[in-house]
Length: 262
Image 1 (spheres, rainbow, N blue to C red):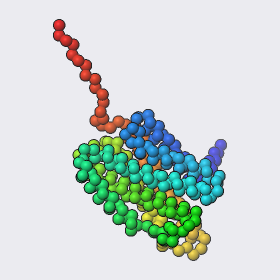
Image 2 (image 1 turned 60 degrees about the horizontal axis):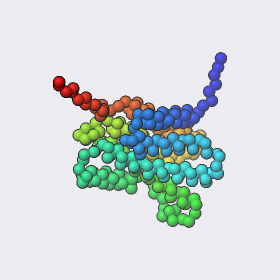
Image 3 (image 1 turned 90 degrees about the vertical axis):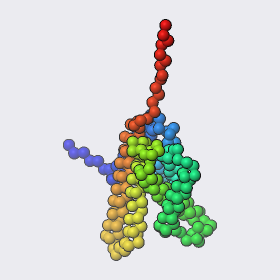
Image 4 (image 1 turned 60 degrees about the vertical axis):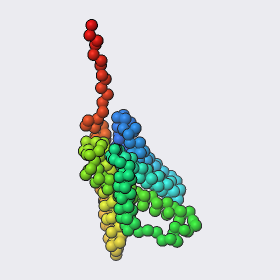
């Protein structure tokens, strides 16, 4: 008996990613992690929603409407990504004096902003000021891309700070905060690496025939699939880490009064 499974790599990765996100949400809810990490939980919900919408709405809506919906969701996800960084930074460095916390935050933001400013193409001013629906979508897409890139850079920088100094505060190796950040920074590095390689391919590739173009597109698709595999591994990491209680987590100990002596 021969079984014929006509599933593409993209379909398999989509299914694995969506299933892993649902399991992670169950863990966050069942292990009461939502109360500590509400914005991280929101980001996972939005990621699952984007996956579901990309599958259910594709070819069901006009192309312009579909793009508007997905780009609007991407803008929201970029904003939530920045809030996740703030949330994890506050959790990691509880007890740090406020002036020092603000100074470090501004320094990290300045470094990430400088990298973002010189990295990647920026649209022409005419594109930003053009009065058309397409131009509006391009501006929204640019905001989503730049916000996402900023969140990725901030995540990597924050993870480095937490690994170096987190033990002094409340973000040691076995803390959920550092474990979440390790996963986020791994996914961020994979995403940043993907962006750099695709930009390099777009700048240097000069296909002379259809075969060369197909080879370039196939290589790009393999890079995207590899990035998706990394994200699935990261979600599994979060599932395992967030299921296990932190070492030294507070547990309620009831003090039983001694019986009065007769």
